[in-house]
Image 1 (cartoon, rainbow, N blue to C red):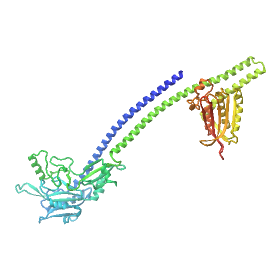
Image 2: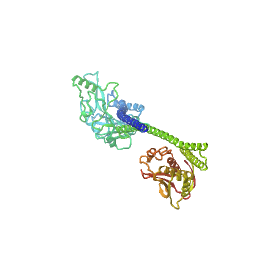
Image 3: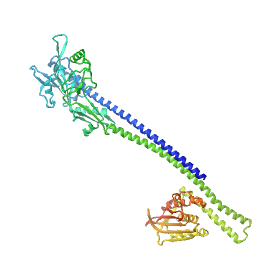
Length: 620
């Protein structure tokens, strides 16, 4: 009763610990999930901010590179076309000597009115340092016609799109276009000079170098990493974004456009100026001032500023897309598909690692609890074993001591009595020796110090030899033995001493539990097992049988079933465990069949000797 109470207390404590552990793991998992969500949101914001910064820097560097060209060809002091041509040629020569990307400009053109008031296109010949009249190239499209229809004039009048002194980008060529002004005197105020429109300057850009050189370099600088580009980068133009200007790698453009992580217009004002309308608010080809507060003085001041041109030191130069042509737009997508997919993948990995750690922690604690219970159970079994062995040893020792005292005191004074006492001492001594031998054998088997010399054997010989050794014990117990050995059985590969020990233990076990009917059966026959042909040796009794709850544990060391303890059947709980260990060490196995009230059958499954198989030594 005390053991049952102690066991229930231990089970309750273990259950409470496991329940508390489960609650802790669930709480930690919920906190981990929430923490992972917060980390993922923060990581998404960080990646988006980093991407937006990289896109802005990409735009700034591209704008700065093109603005340096605009600055080099900004002419403010020309009084005539001839003087302007010389200044443009001089500026081009200076720019070419100092520019970092000289390949970016492929041609400089002037669209101006001749003395006959006819517009003509002139191209700079860098070697001669002069402008030469040329026909409008076909790659310019409708640029020449547009400049002919809209001569550079007062900013409030129809003219090229953009600010009055901003450069406009013709993305389809590509080219930078800017109104050209000559400086002249004011008739009303001879001292003050005014600027009058005279045409346009056109800077044609090298499309091939722009794609493979400048844009590729900027993409590597701002969207690259140690292993290459982290993002897929595209620069597209057109209202439907079908004009592919640059693509970082050979992937479908529509895929990048459909799941872009960021888009940015490369040219145009970053922040709308109060006097500068947004491009989408203007009709195509039209520009006008739209002040927030229509103050006449402010408007007049703005007009005067526009006519006077940008102040000295103004920079960087403003480059606006030509509203009549395609705009350029930067489109970026992560190589993994999108930033959301990248963050989701990181979150899944973090959750997997975190939950994995929690599961390992929970499994470790559960295993510790299970191992602790098993250790406590083993300790209890060992204590029961010590108690049982002490009781088993005490009985033969007491009998031997009592018989020896009777002999010493002369109680046995006849030859028959002396022989009886001698036989009693001999039998109890053998019993005592067998118990000690069994304990030593179990210790040797546990420490793998038992070696088996396996060789081909006839199972008939082993059975007969074991029954002969146990004849006195069987006869003293009053048992009837039924032996059936099939004729012509093949040989088995086993150690004769170890196999005999296994059979003796099974016979002793049957004699111990089959007292009610005093019947013992030994059978040997062939069969087919998991390893092929085998010999099956069965030792059967007609005892009380084994309870279903005890059946899975009968081969555990020190284990004794409830019926054995209740019936006060003596034993150490080592016999069946030893048989199982020895049989498995010789390549066989041990099985049991039992039911309450129907006895028990223990079967040794021993592999037969295969043709050409050699004897071998095995360790237990």
